[in-house]
Amino acid sequence: MSRKWHVGELFDEAGSAAQLAAGSCFHKYVAAHYRRGQSLSADYLERLCQGAPVELDGAAAERIRGLVAAFQASPWAQRTVPAEAVEQPVHLVRQVDEAIVDISGKIDLVLSNQHQFVDFKTNRHLSEADLESYALQMFIYQQALAAQADDGDAWRPLLVHVTPEGIEEIEVGPQRLTRQQDCLRQALSQLVKLELSQQRPPAPPNAPCTDCQYADWCTGVDSNKEEASQ
Image (cartoon, rainbow, N blue to C red; front, side):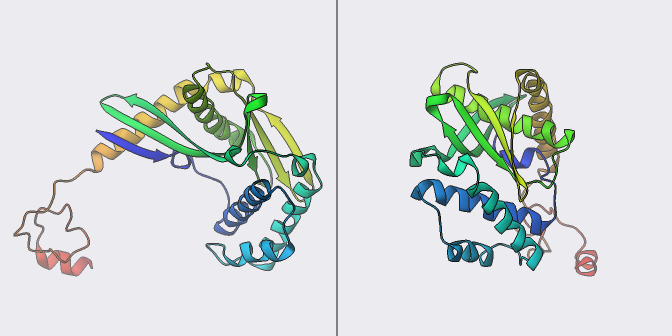
């Protein structure tokens, strides 16, 4: 069995749909800023807000403007990075029991000359539980970069917490990262077991409910019950 997961599937991102959309808009703005090597117009930011996957109310749109303003006022906005350093895709392959698991993700910034990678976070507050979840994400990125560069675990992760009030840099230390080896193994093992438990045989050609949404695995339930359940 082989399975591909995105790193975001390994933990639940806290926040409402609007808050998560605001964070996504901010990340798109930052990526475009670094790729273009210059500050972007207010119109560009407004278009990002209008293209969000969920409708943003006035408070959410105002928060995005505050996040961008805090970023622009920080030294991070003055950095110049090569285009390939922005949202760099990575993969980490692990064998879990009988399964080969490929975990993919995108790192906000990879600063190769400093052997450091950066992930921007826009939570209103970062709790200890948040930091532990993000440490797992950072561990995956660290291991993926190390495998890609074949240089051990020397990559240093940095969380950059952005709020409208300002920016805080949080280093994810070795002790916190070391704990994530077992956490990753356990998380992947649970996901693999869940995946296997949910597998169903394909429906036979003469299944009585071929129009049902469950037809891809149903092996022939009572058609009257099926119609009643829809």
